[in-house]
Length: 127
Image 1 (cartoon, helix red, strand yellow):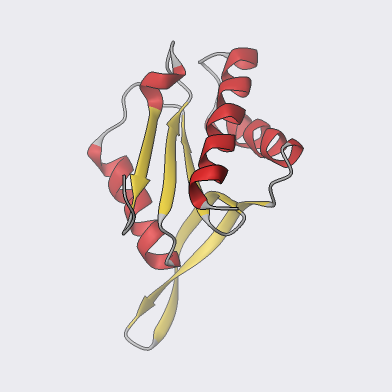
Image 2: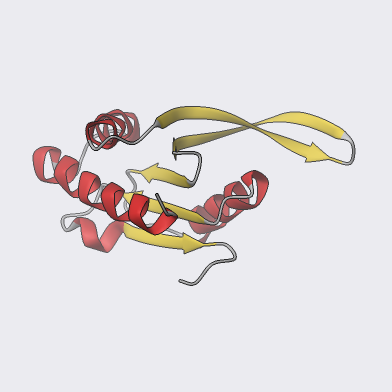
């Protein structure tokens, strides 16, 4: 399955979660529900995956964790904040670079309309 096909399924799953729960919960609640929905769609998901930082020849545990890694192809960064800021996109771009993945989704569930909280971040692939 391509990154784009996975992302399409994840967007639909995120809309399901948002329709059911609405805004106002903690990120962790949305993360677990999104992982459940993604699993229902048949995707292999890993939550809170540690991501070491390679510095020179040393792997360092810098505390990075991928919220959701789907099929080891698409990274999902879940937020529940008032406003998405450039630092949130930068965080996801960093994760894409460190994993060698090309596509990520930044999803802020703390929006009245979820479409306003969705960002598709591409690293080395067409947007």
